[in-house]
Image (cartoon, helix red, strand yellow):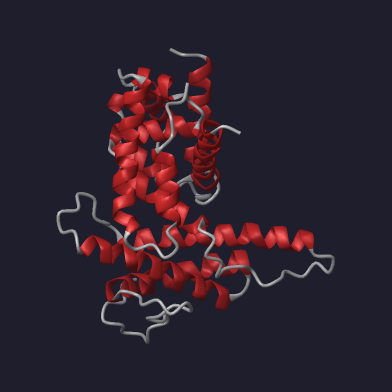
Length: 80
Length: 207
């Protein structure tokens, strides 16, 4: 197996790891401090205008993180 | 509720079960989140002893980070909210233990959870800290790159979003990762973070 292949697996592992725990570790059932969905969409579509508070929030709120991942996935398949 | 000055007797040991010292400031912060952590941990794992032990191990790990930071007064990204940082690290570790517990229960015929490998220095926890630290040191652009890469965007796609080439985008992210590595590298026990970051650094541009 080539070294490049091995490196790809390492990268997948790192980001896969990040995705799995950011998506589960912060349940936030009461949705404390969650931004409106429109803000997440705006952040995905216009990253240069993103609000750092919202970005910070994503690091500690699994529901918002998961929603943001869905928004990005949709954006990837249906670019604006 | 603040417990400055330990108006109540300290509940977190200043040394974790692996014999690692806990920084006094971290100890105070750990005391501050103790009640919340205990409630959350017991709800998931059931055993208060395991929960407290986990909190102490997290505090010891964070102490190493604090010590590293203290030796670098010019660090541009100091930990701003130590209790919050500890609690988040604790929650991640508890969730990891819970997942392991579920696997062990499913694997045992008698249905009884075996001793969780909460002292396991396998490095998973340290990689999580690396991810956390990476997010902490990322600027706005690098963090957006992180989100998109996590979602499966190629570096070329990410670069296009920010008006960069795929390679330049990856370099930008690497820089943040190196900073995270630098902040954590000296304090890690097993060197797993070094290894993980080193591997990521060597990644070739995705397409």
